[in-house]
Image (cartoon, rainbow, N blue to C red; front, side, top):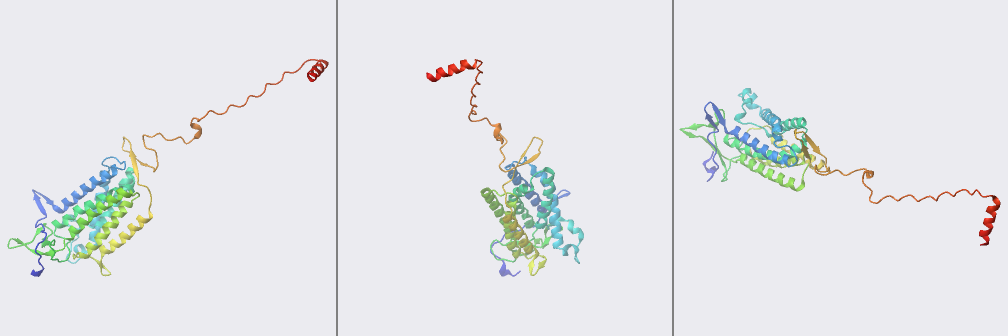
Length: 346
């Protein structure tokens, strides 16, 4: 790198990303992923409780979603970066070394969603409601996880002289440390800290989705669609800065095309799907029931639908009394005629 390109200030990178605790290696990359998962579970739990779900039901979802997500993320990375694993100098065994880095968010979200769907079906927890709860949690997890790339000195951008440029070292991915010469780490150069750009963008996405969801109370997965749209916008411009090896299609990185396609799909979903925000209830056994919109609260008596069941406001009118029948007149005809004549003369 030309000495003229060295900035007056830069962000340092770690010279080590693995610490040996006896026989157990503690890898910063894995630690960042775990911390991101913990943060996501906490946030999603708070959001699910607010909609009536049992406490920590998100852990039952995570048991399915996290393994699915990690496998999916790794598969996406291996498929889209095949040279390192299937190329001339590649090794298939490296595909299993997740701790060396290489998790594709697109595969992670897709496979993680499948795992979450299976868990929700098993518990009768509305999947769309769970996705909306994760719409704030996932970008926070991504923001934390991106710092694993910083520890691994990877996924940086173009060279820069900006004061926030990132100093990057020649890196030994197998042992998780910087290569040295004369006892000093070998500096590769100063580059755009794309890991930091994406981390800050994800925090902004989380805040934006949280505020908009509080204002408009999105339902049926629309908050999740909003998260996807906002994230893909940021991912698109971050990808334009990156210089690491990647597959290109029509002159553009594959991840840029993926961002465009995913953004369009999320936008269509957001515009076409409508519906109220879902809420649930649960009993002492943890059985979850979806609350229909407009249903009475648990402490309210349902209104009678049959008007006949309600007491009348006024008593019904009593029927008019019929006149008593006249008694038959048993007198002789002459006596009746004399009586009628007297009444006429009177």
